[in-house]
Structures are given as structure tokens and as C-alpha cells.
Length: 173
Image 1 (cartoon, rainbow, N blue to C red):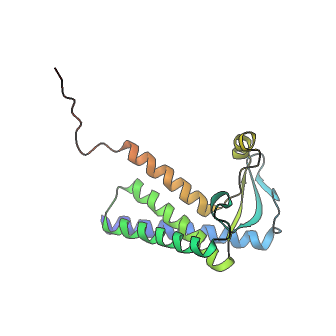
Image 2: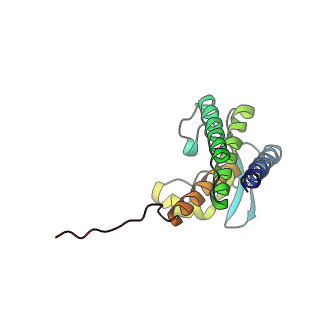
Image 3: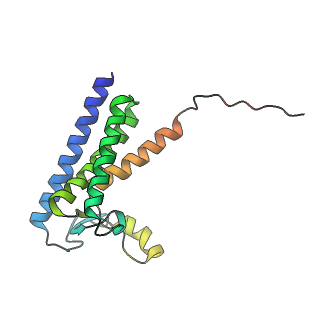
């Protein structure tokens, strides 16, 4: 079972990175740089634009692309090795695989483009975010969805996990 789950993990990682890179290549070829809300494939919900983020989420660490490439690469490698050495239940395997794929997808951008290509703009996230912070929700990409989705799925699986040591209550007199 372990070899099968690891093969599934590698398949998820490969698929996610290919989907991420394909949309990034398409975006660079078809949408003008720094265009926002250029296309609206799902009106009122999702639009496509094109920008390059030379930092991490919300442009944190802007200009630190080489360091971010190394960190993203090592995080992905570390998680993959952990998954190989310590078999996980399938949902945890999927969660870790999505995080690895997202980290590596954005690391690839740092290597090839000097920053991360972002293209997805969520109107519903902006509707929640903008009244609080005064700006639209940042644009993002498929790699980012993998990281965030993997973290959320991983957190859910951990919350559902039963404790390995039973908790007992002691009466005090």
C-alpha cells in the first residue's frame, strides 16, 4: 500500500505542477502584463489577469526570489521525503502532495521567470477582504491553491484524528 500511495502522491504532484505551469504559460502568452480582470471566465466569481510577484504571499519578502526558490524547493523535498519514509492515510497524502506541488510550482517560476506568475482574481474573496484591508484580495495561481488547499485539508485530517493516548480524568478529593 505504501508504494501505491507514494505513486499516487507523485501523480498528484506532477499533475498539479503541469496544470499550474500550463496556465502560467497561457497567461503570459495571452494576457497583457499587469492587466487585472482582463478576462472573466466565471462572471462575478473569478477573473484572469497577469502579474509577477517577486516575493511570497501578499508580496512579503519582495525581492528575495533566490532565497524563496531555495526555501520552496527544500520544503517540497522535505515533505516528499517525509511522505516516503512515513506512510500516511490517503487524505494526508493528498494534502502533503498538494503542498509539495504548490511549493515546487512557485519555485519553478522563481528559477525561470525571476518571480511567480499570478493570474487568478477572486471576486468573492475581494468582497470579504477589501472592506477590511482596503485593497482587493491579491491575485494568485494554481500553485497557491495547492499550498492553501493542502494546508486546509491537512488541518482537517489532523482535527479528525483520534488521540493515540487515551485521556483519562482523575478525581481529586
